[in-house]
Length: 135
Image 1 (cartoon, rainbow, N blue to C red):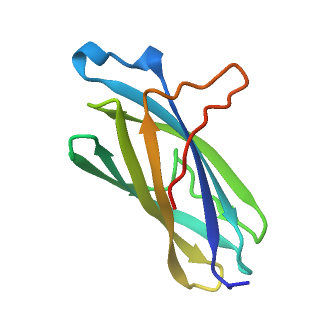
Image 2 (cartoon, rainbow, N blue to C red):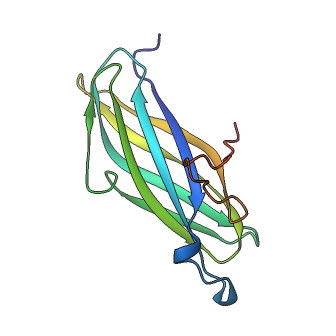
């Protein structure tokens, strides 16, 4: 098991109530679960996202923490949060990375693989939305 390692799982879903297709506004939410799969506790310091729509327009988002938090995760611990994004097209993608500082001072990044935002996928009554994660 690597000393410094985190896994990220993302579950995106379309928000029809926050969308206005006639105005080219498509709202999406996504829930991210970040798990420390390494051997050393580390704190999430910042995030970096690249959000792309179906027309090839990309937006870069950088910032400290996630939803106002900079969680310190011990080995085996997870942190889950939900956030959102808007696109001008009904489909798009997001990917990025998180920057961490370990308890021993080591600095490292964990990549978040590309995931699809798709207005054709609306969460069902049980919350299942058939979302796809691309690796």
